[in-house]
Image 1 (cartoon, rainbow, N blue to C red):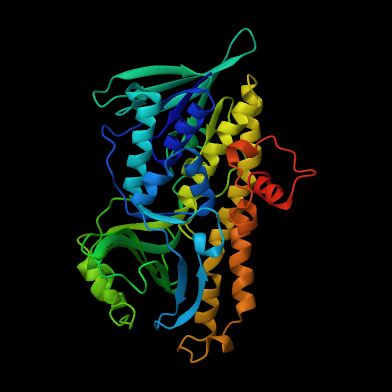
Image 2 (spheres, rainbow, N blue to C red; image 1 turned 90 degrees about the vertical axis):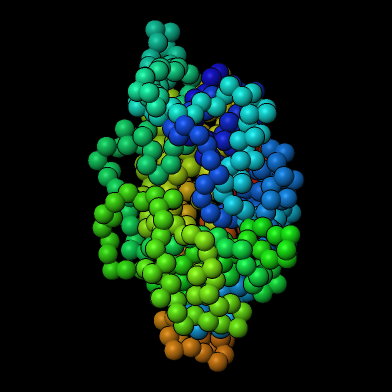
Length: 442
């Protein structure tokens, strides 16, 4: 079997590594002429780190990341609302990792080139079209056409095409030409990194504010001078809802557009405007997603990652869900052997409902719902948070989101990879194994 992967981002590279692991040949085609370490910080949740550990890259990832032990929520006045343990401190067998997206991509790309060979990744190949061709024997194959930077077109054929080409997927647009621009909720996010003194204990993720205005910060690297490289997000919601231009992860942001909005956010644990001013640069993009699709697969062509289920960056789930997609797809193709159509069909059956639920959960604010409630109930501040919101309300909202996203502690107790969980029968297994299977079997 030969699989064509379109896109050398996180999802595409993990797909290549996972397919190679189960003995399936794969070639990766990337639109840009050179893969560079772009972007800002991201979080990898424990269920995704489990999968990366299974791929043998956890040691290098950990050396280039920070494993947070706590997430603390603050009001817009800088008062603590609540804290919760994260990663190993929360009882998981795998850590949560905060890392620069470019570093993660670099590590995955190096693993792909080392294991699959330097000729397996083709840069400067922009997908023009893809179609499934039927043969006289009843089998099928995929034909993909790519355009190089010189304008030359080349044709590639394989048994399956996996479109991991992002929120502006050519394959998705081909299948759904009337879908149009992504859906914007009115929020603008200014993102960047800054070398700065550690916030709190240096292992805490910070969320402050409420859905209409929020500041997020977490360390992604410990520096030799004792400081940390801190990833930040300054978010502000407008009344606009029409996306006027295509969002871009690398569009420069203007400090004058957002720092004044945080001028009085000077707290004893962080001088927010001071931190923002110290950043060498920022990137701005709108918070967008797309409606879940009724189908990802057309013949032998299927979607993965942001091409399949772009979601709001709430709850640290974008990259993690792409990783789970990739591992599940490889497991499904392995489980069905020569029946490619059954393997791809099972992949969509397992992953599409799960990710659609997360898209909707993120639209409902996911784990940020308690922040909204605090702002509505105590906009002028509080002296006792217990008089504003109960711990039971907070726990219910956050645990439900963990279950929806598949990273409740019990679900990972068995240590079963999504790749290996495919095809297992939950009957008669212990609770940890059953919960693990449930993360890929809705």
